[in-house]
Length: 65
Image (cartoon, rainbow, N blue to C red; front, side, top):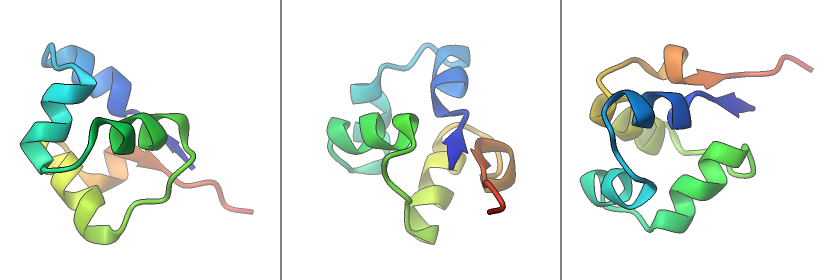
């Protein structure tokens, strides 16, 4: 799975730490999400999208394999 989290963070001038604090997770969680090494729960995906003022569909690009 690919994400556009880094791109959206840049739009709002947020660091990984800033975003992590907004959604109450560790910075490492944001790192893993951005690298596509972690598949978030639906709640986490929603929280990230809400914090970045977008939708889950816009933020997470699911590979259909």
